[in-house]
Length: 253
Ligand SMILES: Nc1ncnc2c1ncn2[C@@H]1O[C@H](COP(=O)(O)OP(=O)(O)OP(=O)(O)O)[C@@H](O)[C@H]1O
Ligand SMILES: [Mg+2]
Image (cartoon, rainbow, N blue to C red; front, side, top):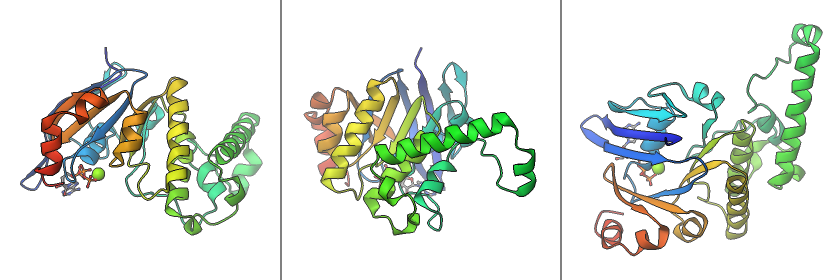
């Protein structure tokens, strides 16, 4: 059975069918790219799968259970984690705190909590701090750890977002345009990190317009058009497919 499956999804906004009877299955360990012209429904697909919006029709199944409409935090606790197209870190908080606070079940910082803090909570806290520091180092944000997140460049924000996401220790990582606004060097670095995470067993699904990096990275490409799967297959076959070329040239990219 697939690790993650959408079946017959429909999502309308007003009269507009953003997702129009879409079915897609992802196997454990896959590294999949999702592409398609603007407005094809890529982000809405992620939103339906991760409980950010509830589909009007169809089901989402994750790890053997139907999870249609389950809230994002419940899914994240079960290992299904996503990033957003626009980053959502708190700008008036430091980079380090943004990463630490992404960890689930953060103990409070109030005095009473500090007094009542149990040993196991302290162990958890230490683990959170260690993991946060590791991730800051991995994504070369350690020298910026004490800066306010609002001062970061677009590319650095993407790295911060990825670091925050990884604090949740996902089984399935869904990335919405991780390379948008990121310079070529950082893009290469992020792609390398994603490849490594996947090699270590993480299932990864990436929406991206930057096709050169994406097609080199993924094993499988899914093309959406007008809320449906147009083509699904190996990157080189997909990119050579007339329907895909037509979707980009003629389909209102
Ligand atoms: N919350 C919403 N309310 C109203 N319309 C929406 C909403 N979310 C998406 N849409 C519409 O649904 C369609 C699909 O949008 P979606 O964001 O999924 O496309 P996309 O493939 O991610 O595009 P892009 O490549 O530009 O990010 C678009 O016409 C969009 O305007
Ligand atoms: Mg989008």
